[in-house]
Amino acid sequence: MDRRNAEEKQGREKKGLTEKGLEAAEALLTQIADSTSPFMAVEYVKRELTAAGFRSLALNEEWQLRAGGRYFVPAYDRTLFAFTVGEETGTRTRLRIAAAHTDFPCFKIKPLPEITALGCRKLNVEPYGGMIRSTWMDRPLSISGKAALRTDDPFAPKSVLVDFRRPVCTIPNLAIHMNRKVNDGVSLDPQKDLLPLADLSDGETTESFFLQEMAGEIGCAPEDILEYEMFLYQWEAGTLAGFGNTLLSSPRLDNITSLRACVQGLLQGKRREGLNLIALFDNEEVGSHSKQGAASALLPFVLERIYQAFGSSREQLLTDLPDGFFLSLDVAHAAHPNVPEKADIVNRPVLGGGVTLKLSASQSYANDCEAAAAVQSLCERAGIPYQRFVNRSDMRGGGTLGSIASAGLPMRTMDAGISILAMHSARELMAARDQLALERLVQALFS
Image (tube, rainbow, N blue to C red; front, side, top):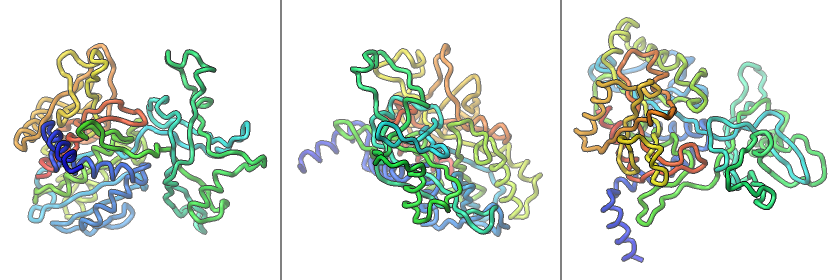
């Protein structure tokens, strides 16, 4: 066994996966396992930041900040900002921001979701984001989210986070014998074909079986639950894969890879002047137009609050913004080895190629010449491998939060991330070594 481990280690190192790279990949898997909804993703980050000495601030309280301080600001339980302030110069030296998103394509459970049919109990759900629907079939699924409980104050219900942390649902395929064309491609109706089975019916009509199960998880009476935001997630854990453990197969690579890089970069950054800030937004997968999304007023609001706490005016903030830099992080598309014709004819990012700069003439990715040059320079100085992604000229690509958030902030912005395969599948695939490269880029930004 020792000989095999030594051979695997040698094989990994030949393919560029160092011990530090392996540690970063394994830490990513640990974080993904706990980040089962935007709520849980933010909770995980809060624990990390608290352990590192960051102090929590509330949006509805007056902030008392000091030079050299480390702070985080949760927003609506599913978005979070964290920042460090220069020990000598306070905020007034080159603002630097890195951003990612906390949400992922999945199914959201509707109100009054209980359905009983043919001896089975089902849940009424709707798709959240642009998922590859077929990849969610026949998998063990669990449930995670938040419930609002009744209190004496109607404007202040008690919020409780819930994660069942066990397989409780599955969405079964129709057998090939009943759909002989299933391997030719099948259209799945989300209101009919994608309702998960949650239990067997005991013959009794139990209209609130889901509410009862959730109340049992919380430890409250079902009637105390006023409302909830609950999501299905793939229960099977992510794992290293490949003969040399050089691949990483997991749910939620989009976008916990980037979220983790933001946090680790902030923790490890060595810059001791100015303002370093990370913004972890919700709702990117559905357009970012929400009170906690990248299109909201939250980021400008937080920046202005920080400046005011140091006695700086809004005019001073507006003066500093053009000299700042915004790094927007989200996964990119690797060229698919089985379908290479879907990639650009020249710019073909590959698994294991390091950080991917995302370029688009339409500005669906935030980029310009100087911003791209700045990120390339950071990579070259730190010895970080990088590559470029652009869409084929005859294909419409996706977008991310960089262009949306930067539209309200007059500062250079660049979109980047890790190139993966099977984006928006229930399980996605990346090169294990790329996580460390992305974390090192954010560290370089904050150093």
